[in-house]
Length: 263
Length: 217
Image 1 (cartoon, rainbow over the protein chains, first blue to last red):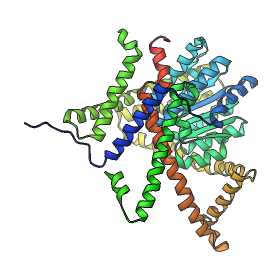
Image 2 (image 1 turned 180 degrees about the horizontal axis):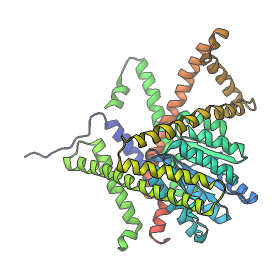
Image 3 (image 1 turned 45 degrees about the vertical axis):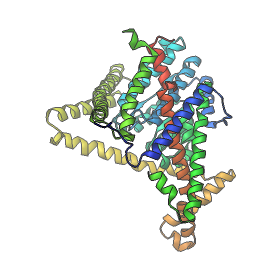
Image 4 (image 1 turned 90 degrees about the horizontal axis):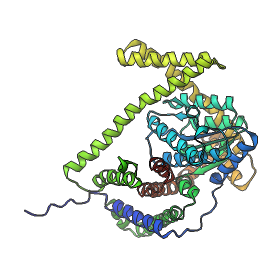
């Protein structure tokens, strides 16, 4: 009877190594709390400006954590982080927060999570009575029905700011343009590449790709979390080095890097 | 029950579930681990199916409140409520192949979706018109790039400016493609780091939940 081994699945060794490197680096950075230089991200900084604007104008703000078509995935977590931060700021400044939920079949679960997070922030700020569950209505599980209802609510409530971060598809342009028409400051962020150009054109501030994913750490101000942003930069440097190496070696006629990455 | 209120409980739960999801992806594992992965995935589907009813309940409650208050446009709430429940009941009682269910689908939902999707082009045009104002170096580059791509795509565009086509192809296949790959790589790394932060119980969204569960400690 020999020892039964469970080998690494074919074609996934390089992925496993890279994943392991990222885990080690992230956990090391979390513990070291060595905060690297982090450039200011205008779109994230603009959230406070947007909530300040709402306070001065006495108008509500709209926050969306996206359509969440794949449930609680990375962009949705980023959207929830933004919603949590906005809820805390709104509770502190007595600004009405409206967060229309929906957009996909999976958004039902995200809705419950979002409501819990927002209610928690109101409790932590000592204003549980200010939380109104009717300001986080579920509008529809269909993308365009949700977007239409969202726009209708914006037309009626005239928010000072509209923050939309998370998974956003075509309907995001619809919402951000309506936001622009009613004079709201529009802050958006998505990881859906085809939509970024449209959102960049229609929003006042836009978070692009990884900026959005790092927003939770950026807003937390926690040294450990901020230090993990360094992991992303190291990861990118590794990829850059592999890319340059691949170009040089492939030009010389060797498939070494291709074979390495496909192992 | 006190263990259910501890932060460590939530983090341990996340770590254990993550192991059952990640390990079968990378390794050839015993059957029970693969079964566990499938079971966890299927459980998520069941939870989502139940949460649909939560959505229906909150939507109904919201529309009923609007009807009760007789606010502006309250009758629209009545229409939405009526149609939603007719659809739910016809689907449950008669099945998805029933004429009334199909009628609601084809006569209301699909035309509504298509109409709103078509309206998007006007919003895109107005957003594009604002973005293409030559206010800075970036917007100037964007505008020139867009003009070449437009000339390639528009009818007669290439006939009027024959060299616009190759320039547009170069912009799309070389410059835009390089940017797309950089974007995708940074996004993938960002997602992994976010997942690790979540597993370590550090992400703000999770901390919000934990604080609630542990009573603010």
